[in-house]
Image 1 (cartoon, rainbow, N blue to C red):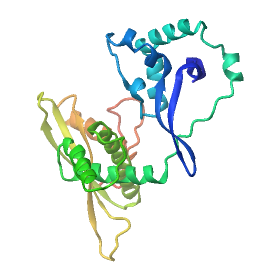
Image 2 (spheres, one colour; image 1 turned 90 degrees about the vertical axis):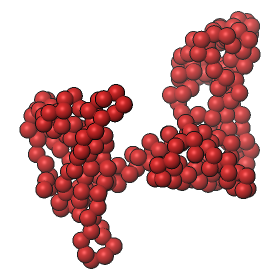
Image 3 (cartoon, rainbow, N blue to C red; image 1 turned 90 degrees about the horizontal axis):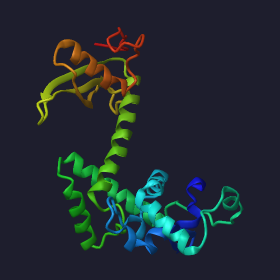
Image 4 (tube, one colour; image 1 turned 135 degrees about the vertical axis):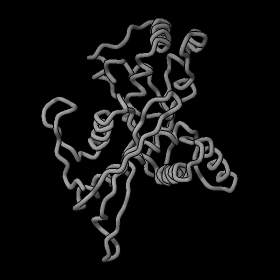
Amino acid sequence: MAQYDAASWLIYDSEKTKKGQYCTALKCKGCIEFESVIRNRPKFSRAYIDGSTNFRLTNVVDHANSDIHKIALSHYHKHQGQLPSTTGDRNNQNQPRLDFSLTPQQLEDLKKKFDIGYFVVKEELPLSKYEKLIALEKRQGVSHGTVYCNRTAATEFMSFQANELLTKLTKDVVQSKFYSIMFDSTTDSSITEQEAVFVLYFDPNPAEPMVKVKMGFLSIENLRSSDAQGVLVGIKRSLENLELCQQEGNSPYSRWPWRGWV
């Protein structure tokens, strides 16, 4: 963050525990002090004024590149009677190191939220139920903390869970001796042709000695055309997520082998 002069404006709230000091929220000095200047500007956000709990580096960079931050930071430096620090100055500053690790309680709270998010998806419930289930458990005395309690967090949890399930499915299909592909077409609200793709395979690690057949969902692919070639390209694209097909050449219509095709 040196190129964004973060040392002069990025501050954080912390929480002291037995294991040390933990960061709980990120804030911006410039946006806090000159909120009145940027409040009515387009894309104004209070995230770094009230405290952002999104600790991703990309989120901090997005704030540093935002117009409202640049305006506030300019006023802040002028008020302080200083110019932004040079690279050499920043390297010489002795800054405390931020600790983004989770406390045991925060980790336990996060696990509960992952479980609730997974339950909402499996039961095909609307995302609003995620927030209501957490609110219900809080009323029953269950600890959930104060962050990641909205549907935006639920969506992010679901993306992590989907990637984990896809990784496990990939491992199982690669280890199985045979598999086959099932697909069916549908249309969305914009009448766009789509193809739902599933994989049917033998369980490579069955709990019982008898053969067990399993089915996994791969994806829903938007088709460029609804003819046979368009469907074929859609299925190929879906299977590339499992790394089951290897294209020869650069053409999307080139011939490609299937391992274990039934």
